[in-house]
Amino acid sequence: MENIQYTAYEQVIECIRNSVRDYYGRHANEKLFELYLANGEHLTYSIPESSIAHLLGVNVNYIISTSCLTFQSRSAIEVLNRLCENENTHRIYSKISNGYLDFKQMFSDYTGSKLIAFENNIQPNVYQMEFVCKINRDICHSNGVDPINAEYILCSKDNNDNYLVLGISCSKNGYIATTNQMFSSFDELKSGLGAQLMNQELTFMSKILIRSKFDDYRINAILKPNEKNDKISALEKYRDAFNGKICITYDYSMLAKQTQQSYDNINTILDFMENKKTITSATIDSLPYLGNNLKRLINAYNNVLNNAALDQDGNSDYSDLQKENENLRNELYQLKSQISQLSEVNAQLQAEHTELLEERDTYKEVISNVGKEVQKVFSKYLSNNN
Image (tube, rainbow, N blue to C red; front, side, top):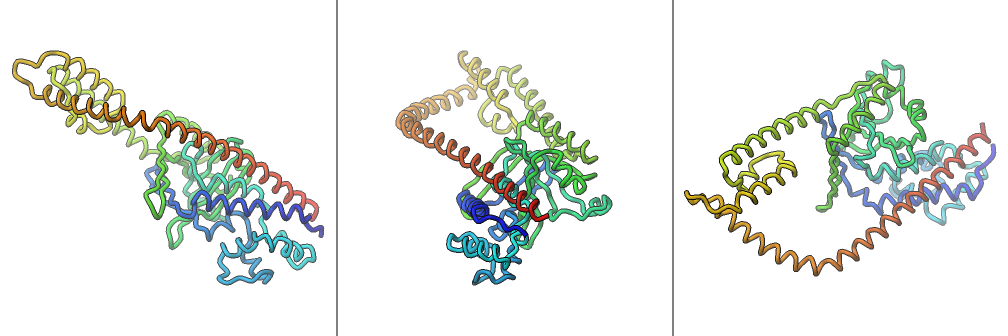
């Protein structure tokens, strides 16, 4: 059997080391990911450090069983960290080259592609998410296949049209990531997971909230109605390919409710206009689902109405609004003063932000390219030993 070359093994370890560094650099170990699905389900999961080795395709149990390294706790993260230590790279490779360790048992055949998927999957993106599937195990068995090691499949697509799959399963500590895969085309996705996805229910993620377990850090992203329509169009493609069912009734019932409320809001506003009465801030606050366009309409109407003289009955709505406007003018003056002081700081922050974005994009491209090279290493090694 031909052994993997040292430089290739070193490259594999360096990529794994970078992925672990990226995981902690993004504080993925501290985050909770809350998904709001169009079928009404609310799913919260984490990516614990105990899952990293498995997600990257490192066989921790095999490494422990060989006693090739000494461990204290024998935890998955300790094994991974020890494997990635610089002083152990040559030591482990020597054991591979003399036949004491089996490279094919240490790593998954797909570790290269898992590295690419991992970089994206530790920071899920609502806009890149193609579909979510809750796996019905009975359907998998009726399809003649064993269910994937996941209760939910989250499938997204990156800028290179790679399909990235993250599997989520329930544990004693809640839902956690258990599967991490990449498919370079839709045909590969169908070949790899088509049997598990056949006849299943498909939905999309309409909102994601990423928050810290320990502080107030949070990121919130919500799809707009037109973006939801794009997701539905994509779902139809997957439904046809997998003979599945689209389940988005909850999201559309909420949309119908908001649409009805918008009509009710318009009727309320028309009543004020017909009676030539100011629409006060208290009234505005009482109207749910009031969009920006209606707020602009209300402001324009109040401005026109309040340019007129106070009516003969001494309508207090106008005087209250006049006082409120005066207070707003004072606040505006103070804000303008603060803005001028902060403009220079803001310009500096924008420059730093742009630099960080460029750095991130460069790093993502490097990770993707290196991951592909590592996958080539695995493919070449496997073809030489088959």
